[in-house]
Image (cartoon, rainbow, N blue to C red; front, side, top):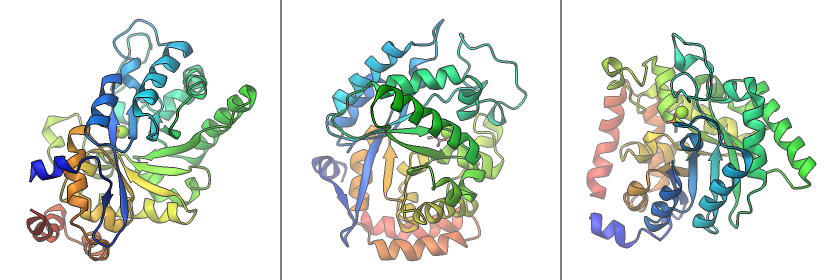
Length: 319
Ligand code: PEP
Ligand code: MG
């Protein structure tokens, strides 16, 4: 089966009833872009830019950032690239960034909050991205958004910088990884052009389980109906303004989750490069209407185990 999936890795993933689902890759380095291309990814749905900022004495300047993003864009060629702005905080400390100790880093100054507190960092990263000449579509995505004003401020900054440079601003979207963002998706969709579900953090915050605490992290299950309801709310909120929703957290590469996510209306899955062929092969076995029925039942299921039980017959059939 694996060999059959690999043989068709470069073809697009279309459900049995003809709906195309974009399967793209998560990248965390320049080398990852090459693997994504060779594994059949249709682009990059999440470039984690932290790799450029950690383990060094000073943050990268605009020129260094631009050169690195340009290299990744060149490797992807005409494929689309979504770059996530810096997502660090007391949980991923950088030596050059003085930060107060935090009792709860996951609830602290991280993601977009840190970038708005250190606007110079966001501005440099935006400038670097505005200088990239990509053949494919380049989009920018903000991490950890929990309130409309965070998006509004970043959006205004990006548009001001683009105006100063005389270029048009890339599309700006957000990670939906806080329950607040999921529940206010319709409001955020006025300004965010797309959503990408960060299921790792969304599960952490919805289920109140620290993803870095081994005593509780094993119970972090994105198939918990509470998480699925947040994903459903996101898709619906986005649709009210014709915005698409993807998933870039680990859930996108979980076979039991794929039929449910598609059934909820997710149209893009961003997974580790090594999972691209297998996820595409799975999508080719799915009927969207049936996935919609399953997804509706999953939303009211008792727990994650009940959701898995709903999907298992489908996966056995596919195997
Ligand atoms: C997520 O939270 O699901 C996500 C994709 O972001 P990260 O894992 O980098 O926090
Ligand atoms: Mg996250």
